[in-house]
Image (tube, rainbow, N blue to C red; front, side):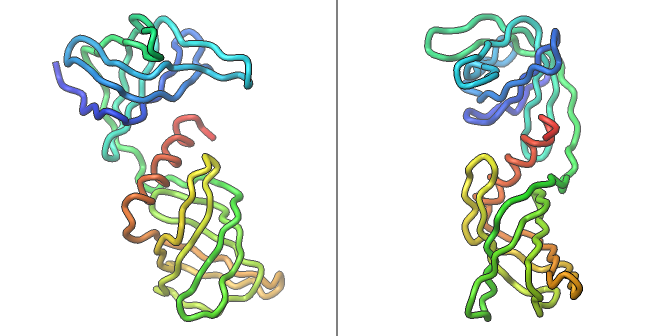
Length: 207
């Protein structure tokens, strides 16, 4: 039996096999190879007061270092301390995710260019684990390769603060007095991991 590269604290996505529209996000708490996996309670929230626990046969999706591990399991039981025990899979399917899958968003962003005195407000229109696109309502006379810093808050309320970004493409729209800028994120592994987690979450839940 092959070993899953499970890490405590890593997210795992659960889907009911009885109703595939029912999905939940959980976290790996522990595991015993070949026996069981312990996760936080996989709870589906329909509203602030209405929720349901998953039960029976489930499909699991686990992300690790850019690889997606998919396997079938069964919820063995729920513990009293807000955790669930599921069966360790006898087999799993491994596939690589697209590294830079675009997620379309509409997020306010702040663009800072080191040589400029002022910062520019813009709208982040798409984002991936590798970069993003920002629309600014003014003409920016910048060139490819310019180093900038972007700040914005992801829809999951994660703050991305002054992440270093390099301009990879720029398009000026004189008619609408705007500039469309494509950025590649650079360095800052902690913030990049937050962006990657958000993008993968959206990919799984087809946001």
